[in-house]
Amino acid sequence: MVVFIVDGTVGEGGHAEAILDASGPEGRLFGCDCDPKLLEKARARLARFGDRVRLEKGNFAELSKWVAPESCDGILFDLGVCSAQLEEPARGLSVHLDGPLDMRLDPDITVTAADIINTYSENDLTDLFWKLGGERYARKVARAIVYERSHVRGGIRTTGQLARIVERVIPSRNLQRHPATKVFLALRIAVNDELGALERGLEGAVKLLKPGGRLLVISFHSGEARIIKEFGRRNTSPWKVRGKVDVPELREPGKPCLKWVVKDPITPSKEEVEQNPRSRSAQLRVFEKIS
Image (cartoon, rainbow, N blue to C red):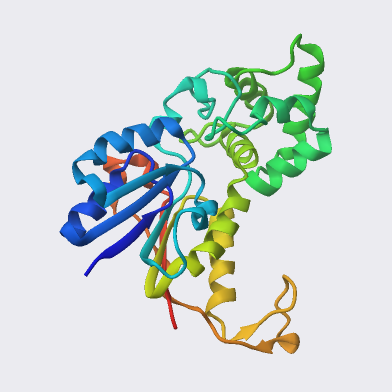
């Protein structure tokens, strides 16, 4: 019997390779990624599987373009960025490597982090850093950015410039994390519409799964986790909610389309974190579609 799996964030193909090895000759996999450089690495890595694998450039929020409804035995979303992306200065994703203030994971996106930093108002920057990054010094950072960009010819254009501005504003009390980490996270999420894509991708995945099919999501920060938990609450509850706020008195009878398989997230072991420190914040949650 053919087993069909979707890897919506195929990256360099690590998860896809493991899935295809484990599923045997009957396993089939569709994978997509918005980063063409990573996709080429995945093509080379997975070439040995021949026609058992198909790859396309695109975002997992668009899976319905390539995948038929109720055709999937499993869907995997591994959110965030990979090490290869962080370690390439030209992408502008790392606080430790100086490069252009870009942050686009998909080169077809038209707005860069530099555009946001140099055009947003102080209030808009404050909202962005606080809501998407959880940065408690959001107002101070935004004010410093607006001041600095008005005094520098050409504005703020590199990651090094931005990191130094944030360093001057935020007390450096945590030696394990750069003071600008949350600001960079917020900018990356905004540039790539990561939370909006996650919401669309989760809802779309429900339609693509067969009854009994499973959706696995690996998240790395609280913004992603909040969306996943809300998605789970909404789709596993035996009632419908009017609007975005769940008021018990206004609930209407409904039928859940999912059940939790792993609600309390699985986290990396101590040994895994020692081997891969970037995995320390990873959380795996699993749903199963019910008929």
